Length: 71
Image (cartoon, rainbow, N blue to C red; front, side, top):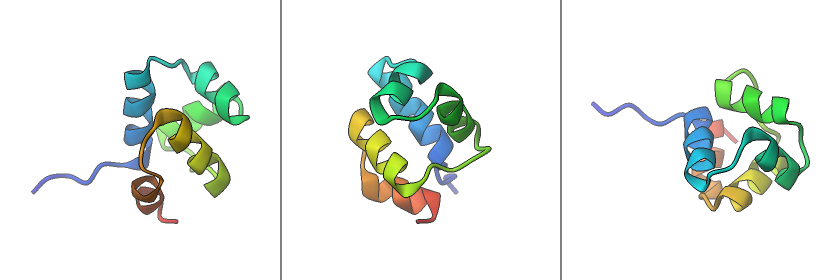
């Protein structure tokens, strides 16, 4: 059975695919680089507004990200 992707791995993969650093994504959505690092490590989940902004910046589905985040 295939393992369901996690929000943190989806965000990291999308960021790397776009060629963005943690800080570049953070600057684009108005958070700190540490916040992005914590999301990608699975330590914290982004607020809904930040998740939507990250999805827009990364050009990924907000709906899928919200489902993975349990929102």
